[in-house]
Image 1 (cartoon, rainbow, N blue to C red):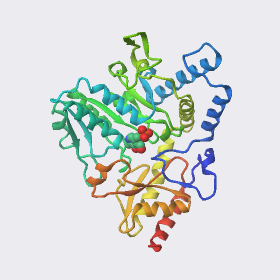
Image 2 (tube, rainbow, N blue to C red):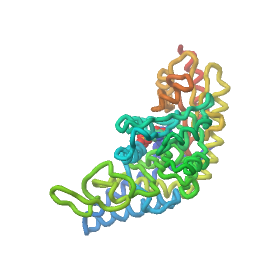
Image 3 (cartoon, rainbow, N blue to C red):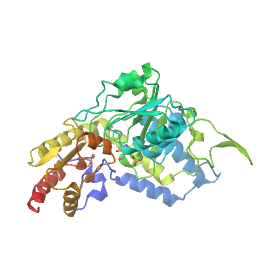
Image 4 (cartoon, helix red, strand yellow):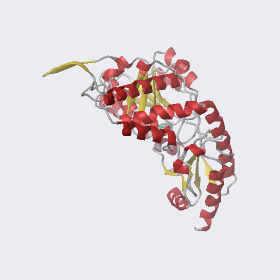
Length: 393
Ligand code: PLP
């Protein structure tokens, strides 16, 4: 297979570059690079802070970006909150529960979670005395939902889970998980960091309370994140400062409403310009077309690794962008370093998902993940080098 979109990425048009780590961060297309450069060349302004043209055009960038995100995930602009990334979004929501959660309550997460969707809930429970329940996974990485209802009935206030696991590569059944929680009045937070570039995401269809993702996984530069909140006014700001107030006196303040009270400080204009243009880029191709292409390529990747002796795959056969695996004798960091010498970028380690790997009986593994720019050449190079690595040990 040959990617029809690779030519958009200058960073990949060098010889011997096989970037197979898009699950960590995606490469940025030239249209996004140009848009950022143009924004800066036209002159920087602080949005909402001035009557002059640079400030007004920054205000417009933010307004347009919010609208584009809202259209992309099917919600209202007022439900889109800008953050630094998925990690900050989840911390923002967890922090909002700190005042109301009691030792009689519980929070539910799953064994699949990235540490970004685990540590904030661990700390929240440690601070409030609430219980943290963990839904287990089966040996094939699928969620084991047998005790789901029971955990929801344990005075659960919120269930936080990933849309698409960064190790297993499986899309969870959001509709069912959310519907079951909603029936017993439990709020839902979906970590969409991995799903957003592979799945057509729709807030109206899912009906979750919170959904979050990061710009850098969806072909924007780093520094931007999105938190969708069904009712943003129910959240408390993580940060206090400029841009979020109605009135401030020397000993008190009153906050604006909705998303406006949640975005203190000057916005990251470079990141938001990038995000806005990355959304245009994806929309110009179509997320469904991207997903289909990546799914077929991942199948090829899965089968190729599966044919290798001595390597064991731990991701799901139905994964649509990620293949996680390990060698029976050679440490994954040694393999990743040797692959890097041939221009092959894969991730090695625990992937910030230690409980997930522990559940599968593995300490660390390699992960190859595809983006819309990868093609069969990348897979061939990976396989050739995975075989030759063995001869070095
Ligand atoms: N959740 C998942 C599933 C992820 O894969 C990641 C990053 O890899 C994160 C959360 C954290 O994202 P960020 O570092 O952009 O905040």
